[in-house]
Image (cartoon, rainbow, N blue to C red; front, side):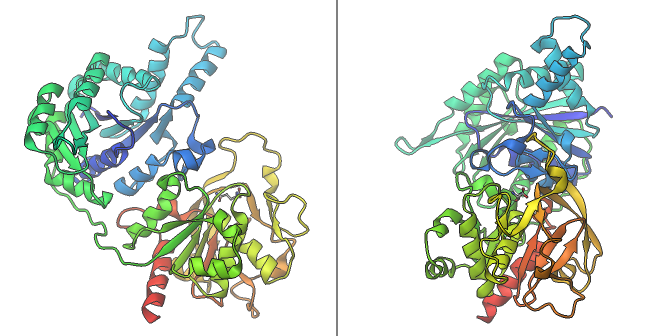
Length: 529
Ligand code: GLN
């Protein structure tokens, strides 16, 4: 069978859930017995998302193979239930870099190197390389963006070369509702379809995003002006729980419409179970990237997928200004606290205050990456009495560098893709809390993204191993590799720090066990109180 393609483009606005829609379409087709994979195209010039500020662009998602990706790859992993790899993302930066490098190597034999055909060829070859029966290609941005045009041109060419019958174009747009006149306005959608047609792409399906359910006559209008059969115009109103989108699409027979259009045999089966009721616990993420809700996306989704209410953001910098009593007042309404990953000094002292409060008051606490590092700093200062102990990331000349740069990182000068990245083995030590969480497993592969590590050699007295007799008032090492991978406290109900990022591995139906254990502890504690 020829490889089939679904190309998803966006119209009118960005941020209307094109990623969720594509991933959901992928899932309903996967459940229907089709071998599915995905490719997210990001038209920006960054080579990857690794150097992008989470405040502007949302979190950086890390894959098993150590690629620093746009957060959309996270949606694909969670929805599709398959691990994404480097090849599941393509940026304009990567494409241009390859083309220019080839030119410098003389690979174009003296020819004039041009957008068409050289850049388009590079794009097409990357798309073709992904082996699967059905490839979902999501083109980031909105139709009409200068940067995206070359990608649309490339998929247009590809659809001719591979056979238009093997291609399905889905255009996702937004239809606003005007309160003043009480009507939906389809004009922006009509115009965005026109833009697409001008490029030579005729959509096969139009998905209309609305804030509430649209009326029939507006749907008909879109069908007429968009040149699409009316049953191929799909309305997807906002849902509180995005994990219900696949079910919604299934109910609307989208899988059948796709199968019909692409001539695919499907089994009509759809199994999907996502949490629908959410237990009311209050979890705080004490962080510093507050510019967008997406900065801590995978953590938030991990809690949600455990069946608990989404955590709230607390500004770490705010905490810096207030005394211990004030911190307690502010944080006492939360049943659990997460200290997430991050880079740079801003907000660190606030996180340390939150940690002191959580440790002393036995508030369930989860420290992720920088979160674990700050747990160690707090412990060094307030339990060991090491005044101004710190990470050399924040204080290069601290007397107590309890967190220090990894030896091999000292020589690395360039920024992108150079940290300790991706799946790395952690040995789980028996009798630790970590071992309990992992059901007695001896090892785990978890995703990393860091340059600094816990400095065990110079500060052994702070630590104990689960087998040691004296573990009182020590940070117990529950997981290790060449580095400390996890610390925990015996005294507290849940006080766990991990050097890796469990949030990247949560999937629908299978949230990461660390989040499951964390939320269960919170719930139990809350019920006792
Ligand atoms: N800034 C810290 C480091 O580089 C932590 C990184 C993170 O939290 N992802 O080690």
